[in-house]
Length: 386
Ligand code: LLP
View 1 (tube, rainbow, N blue to C red):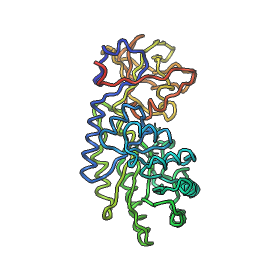
View 2: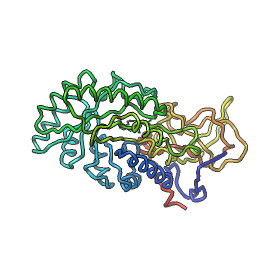
View 3: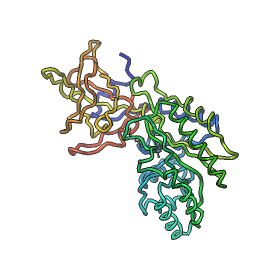
View 4: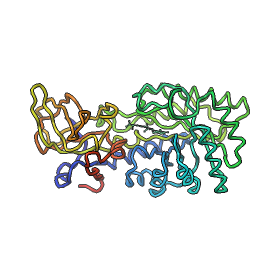
């Protein structure tokens, strides 16, 4: 069995569970994204929601990325990590007045506005602060992302974005607002999308919309296509870097880019998921009647994705022998959904073995909770552990 390059001996003295980040892989990924986006003159804003660990944020900021934030807390974390304010975009269906004021006073690049009601509040608060707010309208393009229902956002009946039918009336309202500058359109249709034809459909729909709006006299200065590029959770060792080449090529080939038009992206998962693993220790091997359980000291409080979305994370025994056996890998939380994987073939496991739950760098540490009054898992970085 092939495992990632884990310094297992150095893990010996560290309290489990913990997050382990492969910083070489993160840097290689960032270099790949940079190479692809600069080839086409695209702008990348890292989606902070995927992982807001300060060290991860600083590393990403140091490659010149912008940031995509969805709360005041994320704007603060992004600024602290060194993302320039004029490269921060701010989305979210429920921005509070306090958060909007923070965005305005920090001078962020733009608010991705999700409703007419929100637009009018931003106008009011910008007037109060006597400043101009740059706003993009998030539009619901009604494109099916063919992904998990809980992470699809581009369909008509979602709470996100402005419906196509209502877009023109919101644009008309925007024109009457004296403290708002319209910067363009924003889209995000879902997450963990591995089928490139989904992104093709998105661009085709957006190009139709662009033609329609231009015919009515609107000029779209910026198009932001959001995030959503998926990763291969099944084979983290073989395909450690997502298909950024294929992804950006879709946009290069299909976007009819207008003169001087900015093309923006907000990738999260594909940037950070592969570089992170949750490392946990086996507390007990429990032999049932028909099943054998490996009970870990990590649970859904540390990595909630399997319990919340039935997500697959590859599990590897870092100490195991060649001989394999079948396990249900579970956590210690008092919830029957606290299961990381059922019927997994793993190298034979005993108490004390270290297990790696792979591809946990996105929506892992950042979604942890303290349910059952558990402490939050710490994070360690490959360039600090030898
Ligand atoms: N932009 C917007 C407006 C978003 O809502 C999201 C993610 C992104 C960008 C980044 O998408 P990505 O490139 O990471 O797919 N917790 C779920 C995923 C939720 C995604 C929410 N929005 C999970 O663990 O699968």
